[in-house]
Amino acid sequence: MSPLAIQGIGVLGGFGCGLDALRRSLAEGPAAPGQLAVAAGAQELQLPAYLADPAPLERFVNKRATRRIDHFSKMALLGAHLALEDAGALEASRERMGVVIASGYGATRTTFSFLDSVLEDGDAFASPTHFSNSVHNAAAAHVAIQLKATGPSLTVSQFEMSVASALLTARRWLAEERVDSVLFGAVDEVCAVLGHCWERFFPEPSRRIEPFAFARQSAVPGEGAAFFLLTGDEQGRHGRITSVRQGRVAALSQAAGPWLLNADGHSSCSGYYRQLLPGPAAVTAATPHYGSLPVGQAFDLAVAALALGGAGLPAPAGGETLPEPWQPAGGVLEADALGCLKCDGRGNFGAVTLARG
Image (cartoon, rainbow, N blue to C red; front, side, top):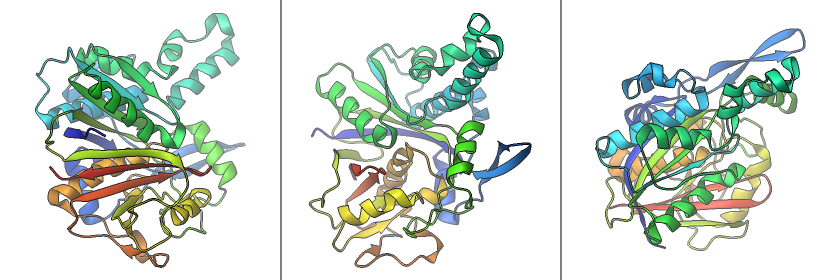
C-alpha cells in the first residue's frame, strides 16, 4: 500500500490533553482512573473509568460557538485542532482536506438523552438539539464546519475494527487524489447507560487494567479522542503508516514484532492475540494509560509514533508474566517498524504497522 505520512497528532483521554500528557503518562506510569456515576436501583454507584476533559477546546474555538455541541463532538473538535496545531497547519488551507472519523459507540450520552426526551415528552417535543448531535456523522460535520474542511467527510463505525477500517478509507482517498490530506480521528465516550451495562455484565469492577492476565476480566472503561493529520508524502513528522490489514484470526506472517497489543482487559478478546501470534514475539500494551474503548487502537498508533520518535515503549504493566514464548517489548525501540494489533471478541483483527521516517 502507499504509505500514509503522519504529519500531526492530537490526543486527549484519561491521561490528560495533548502529546506531552501522553508522553508523561508513558514515562511515569498510568494515573488512577476517575469515577463515573451509575444508577443501580435506588443507589448510585461510582464506576472506575478513564474520563476526558475537552475544556481546552476554548483555546481554539469560541465558547459561544460550541454551546450547542455535545461532549462527544467537543472531544473530536479538540483532538482535530491539536493534530493540526502539532503539524503547524492551523492556518493552512483546508479546501482539499478530507475528514474520516472512527467510532465504536458513537455519541452515547446525547443519544440516550434524546431517547429520554422522547419517552418523557413524546415525539412532538423530543429535543431537536439532542437529535442533531446524536447522529453518527455529527462529530465529523462539526469538525468539517469549524475547520472549513471542504473535502469529503465520513464516519466509520465497525465497533472494535473501526480504526483499521477508517484508515483504509483515508488511504483510498489519498491514493485516488480526491484530497491532499486527511484528518483521521477516532473518538468514543462513556455514559451512565454504558456504565449500567458495564456494572451488569462485569459486577466486580477493576481499577487497573492487566493486559496480559488473559483469564481475568480487568477492563476499565475509557473515553477520549485521537486524531492524525495524514498525507501521501514520502516522509512524515511522526513516521508513516505502511500497512493496514483486517481479517479473521489466523497466524500473521512476519509475527516476530515488536507488537503493541490493544489487550484491554476483556477476557473474551484476549485469547485471539495468542492465536494470532503463536510463536516468539516481542509485545507490550499501553491500554492501562487510556482505558478500554472500541477505538483504543488509535491511541496505540499515537504511542507507536512516539516510540518510533525515540520516546520508548511502555513496559507491560503490573509486572505481569507474559505468556510464553512472548518477550516484553518495553523501553527504547530499536526496530524501525512497530505493529499495532487489535482483536475483537468475535475473531476479527485489525493490524496497523508504523515505520520511522
